[in-house]
Length: 354
Ligand code: 1DF
Ligand code: MN
Image 1 (cartoon, rainbow, N blue to C red):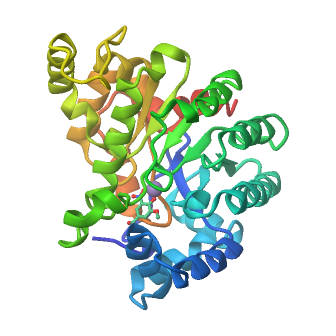
Image 2: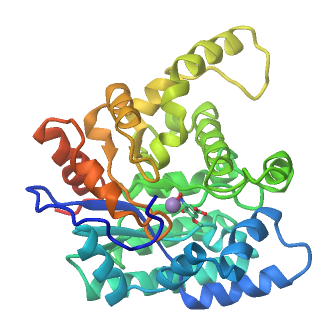
């Protein structure tokens, strides 16, 4: 498996643009702040497991990742050229500001967004960027969405799943959804490690990170947003999920059956009737990327469920920096039209690139 940048071969020239939609960056200043949080009292165990590891390991993959997370210039562009990536949609890496204390998070989100916006201005044909927000302060998050979209020229909002163990299904956060809907911009719900009260059994066997814990936590988060009625309240809101929808497409039948059964039997105060089936929201309010999953059966299954106009390409640079996967995705058995949708035109529509 190609886990670093060493190309095994070179992607062919193709008649579509390759737009990679879940690509990460980290300001060097944020990594310094992370060091302090890690050295402080009782840091979040998921944060220790994830960033504590990447920032201290001397193994090749973590060193490659840390070196390239902070670059928004020539190194990144050279890697994009070598992998045939025309444009990256860049977001503040997980957990972004969400691991910080509220006031610091609000202030640093602005710094990170200014830095990303500057990189996009420097390389307008190669980079686009998403707005990072601090859900710790929903009012400020809503204002930052407006500033990021209307003034900084960013596109989309990145939220790295839970914030100190809290989920966006709680109405206290819904100002954020209101702002995204009002600014007609999608929210990318990106993984985080599971929170303190969930991580135990995953951490003890090494399954808390991107291998599985990310997907369990983020899939559950998306489901909580659906079952809380967020899309009945904000019907135009669009959310993006990576990693083939964190497996939710595969769950769709069971979710629909059991949601209906649970609601009808009035089992939980917290599970109220919805206007539509859970899978209907997946089809109408979600866009799914194949970040981390360069695998044709999963991509085709998801296209069958939610439509080929809702499934987009992502690489997850620098975490899954794998040129052989670009070549594999060029070889997907799709019509020329659907291939172009997957790599290019869906992203252009969703992020308003043209
Ligand atoms: C990892 C994977 C880390 C993804 C990430 O951000 C990330 C990893 C800290 O492999 O530890 O975004 N990913 O999306 O798959
Ligand atoms: Mn990612």
